[in-house]
Length: 133
Image (spheres, rainbow, N blue to C red):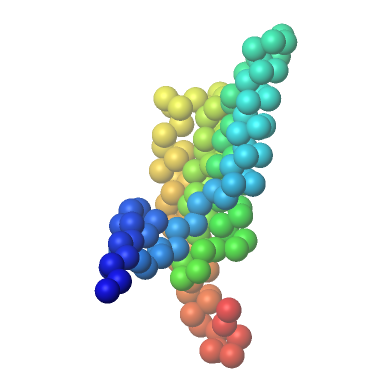
């Protein structure tokens, strides 16, 4: 008689069923960690300062990637891209905005992103079935 095989029931496997979770793959994660490490090493061992302020570019990269090629079953969204832009504006203190005084800009960006997403979804649903993605 054969013993029953046990399957792991963790966050990526639900008792034998695989869950599709899209995240940062090993190549993208490795490149991001390498660039981050190099940036902090340059900042530590040279006179260049403020390299950490450009780290929101990773958020923008991931948002653009997901906007161009959304995960299966998910709609395109602009909200993560606009939040990444807000992070970059606040971290670099562009136009004098900081994290403390730019939170209204974040609210505007999220509202704008939701409105754009609604308009894109409305335009997509108005197309004939033969032209849909």
